Length: 411
Image 1 (cartoon, rainbow, N blue to C red):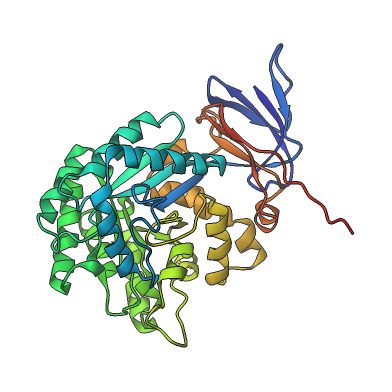
Image 2: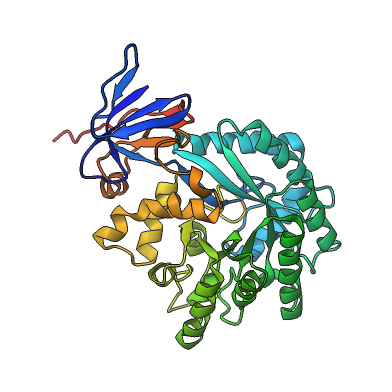
């Protein structure tokens, strides 16, 4: 199939794209159709690699208010609400909700998801079900699974064994939550255990790290130091790191050296953390996100994630990463034209590095024909106009489509 007049990643001129046997066979300013070849004129619309969800909890999605609402809006009440909801978990319950969420993501141009799955459950019901869904849905969505100890590794009964069991079952990444452990000593021990587990089983690492406003919460330095010492480097991701927004600048200057040496990735979740953080503040009230602008300026990889979709921690969400980027640019004050037009990288190339997808991701000859078409000429316009994803193609197969936005003022 030949796609004509595609504006690839904000390019000033258009190119043609030939897809053959599910791969990009040729990309050039002009390609003549082959005899009998199907063609589609994209009319100069923006073509991007597929969007990537770097951080979400599919096992908790679509459960807000069941059995109780998080009335305070805090992280810790959210954890309490989820502890009550876990009693109702079943394989079918998880299947139904995840399938609905995956369809929401697909229509918004997402083809890769990293999902954290709670393993502080003696039955590991969610982990077993998510591993099955990862295989069942692989033709439409690539799902990477993090074994996530929501209630702690040291601070939850048999937490170490449950985490290792989940990794042995087939989780792609090892998780941790140091700021929720009972003590600073538990925090460090939990990170050491998680990192050693990743080495033992050759897994990636993604830590819910310092998701709190307490500037004394400094799990990040341990994560970075261990990533460096163990040679894990960019196989490690620190998610949230909202306490970094409260660190004093003198400490951050020293910490930044270690972060660059370690090579770790960061994920910021602007929607959820601007909602959850700053709850103990009167005024001034903290923004609740990590130092995205500063980390990016230092060449450290940062991607954006949704985190939650209509669950105990976030009572909204529709699978649109456009919303994540839009708010993220505002709260991090990255509103220059170049910041905005290139912001798609937070949910494409940067996210691909976070998920460790390798050289196979992206638009290039020989790669899998995975791409999306947006109803705009560049990402600045797409973001400002909330342009719909007109089509999502995976290995040359159309996964989703929508009509161009329409509507007019009648005066």
